[in-house]
Amino acid sequence: MKIKPLQIIAHIILILGVLLMIVPIWISFASSSHDSVTILTEGMKFHLGDQLARNYNEVLNEKGGWSEEVTAAKMFINSFIMALGIATLKVIISAMSAYALVYYRFKLAVPIFWLIFITLLVPLEVRIFPSYKIVSDLGLTNSYTGLILPLVASATATFFFRQFYKTIPDELLESAKLDGANAWSFFIDFLVPLSKTMIAAMFIFMFVYGYSQYLWPLIMTTAEEYWTVVMGMKIIYTESYEGVALPRTAERFAYIILSMIPPVLVVVFLQKWFIKGLIQTEK
Amino acid sequence: MSFLDLKNVTKIYPNGTKAVHETSLSVDEGEFMVFVGPSGCGKSTLLRMVAGLEDITDGDINLDGKLINNVDPSERDVAMVFQNYALYPHMNVYNNLAYGLKNRGIDKKTIEQKVNDAAKLLQISEFLQRKPSMLSGGQRQRVAMGRAIVRNPKIFLFDEPLSNLDAKLRIQMRLEIKKLQQKVGVTSIFVTHDQVEAMTLADRLAVINDGIIEQLGTPIEIYNNPKSLFVAGFIGSPQMNFLDGNLKNKTLSAEGFEIRDINSDFEGDVTLGIRPEHLIQSDNALINLKVELVEQLGSDNLVYGQLKNKNDFCYRCPGNQKVENGTELNLQIDENKYYIFDKSSGKRVN
Image (cartoon, rainbow over all chains, first blue to last red; front, side, top):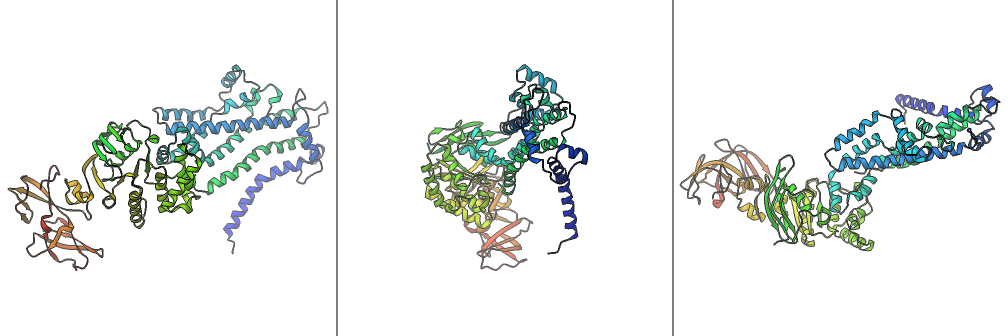
């Protein structure tokens, strides 16, 4: 088989793209396996060093913060719970509200949809004070509920689910009705399995969105046991350590690498589903 | 009271369109009723009202002695085969058939039994584990029918189920539906715009136009004795020839010829209808046809041409009769088989 020049160019472009994505991560990872002194004196590293286990152990288990009680492992768990809660609830609520908007043809369905859509223009950062006021009045500061609840409504996901449901032929609903399906079983038996792919995609996006929240947890949490990974990145490693002011660069890299793992896992795990849904045409 | 009884059923859509006018109709148990009409005539709406998928604006529907106006579709015990089959794309064939039974709370073993029986009847046993996307058009059609049969409903509703199939398969499935209905013996209503389908399938036929049943009867009754211009033009292929004329003193004068002693007291402008197959070549002819085109179907020839007054006209003759383009044929109407309609109202007058 002859390789055409165009193919070679295409491959070069693709390989460059891959390198652009991979190299910074590799440098971070390689650097996280040296000790901080080496990095501070010699710069970032391309090859692996011998401090890998020590650095990661230290990051995960060292108690930090003002109270010297919170560990990075705890922060990973917090972030994971928060992201999982946000993604799950966002998907469920959006799918259900889209179901209501598409299938219950009440008079105000269209204005309500646009009202939901307009909230895209008002992100959390804009309404942070009222949101905080409500959550604190409800006594939900320093709790997982407080971290998750204000973020669970999603106009984007509602929009995507609505567009998808609109492509499902009416006959399917009618046929299901004649087969004795009620409103609830039509949702569970038909819409959910048919929108598997959509659910997987939305879950990935929303998980990453939840995981990378910074401002909201920062304002919401005063107790260190509810700190999240993104907050920790700022707080823990910018402190000076007991007067000996040597920045702990290697541990920072280790922390960064660790913080990438949960979203990557979610993507890797759901991608199987995602691709399966793409290959099997279900119509 | 018969099995299915429609009484003054009316449908008016919210935008004011009247899709079905006060329609009354009864279907006997085990009967195969066909609604036929052009698209947009209200035949599907009528069917969907029986299914419960459309609200009834006015009137009553009784099924098996029970008023079902406000009964939920899932509780009417009707099964419907849709035009695009509406198979459940994410379920395999087995689950497609079993879904309706599961919802009725039937135990697993009975479901399995029923599904297997229906699958055997329709010869789809080997596809039970496949998804609908892996089936051909004809197989999907069978699955859709299986889904209806398996529930053993009071009535089958077919909403143009053959229109997505290619011509050959359509004829095959048409036969299968008829055979199956005779075997299972379930009361059925079949909606179609194809008059051949309607004629071949129906025990009784309802020709619908503009939301009104124009004529109700056995296919042969309707073919032999159409009561209106619309029915005459709709049933029969190729279409009936129509000529303008005038009726006076029991004498019809169309352009170029006269027919005497007509069994009608009507006087005024009329339309004369003659089926292409009710003509014979004869020396003392009424009609003179200039042949423009001959379609040879093998068994028959369809001869298209023009009369003296430039009216299009069609004549059907046996396939062994040779007809050349450009020749002139002299045609006589076969044994008084002609139909006369009032030109303004379209009603039959002879």
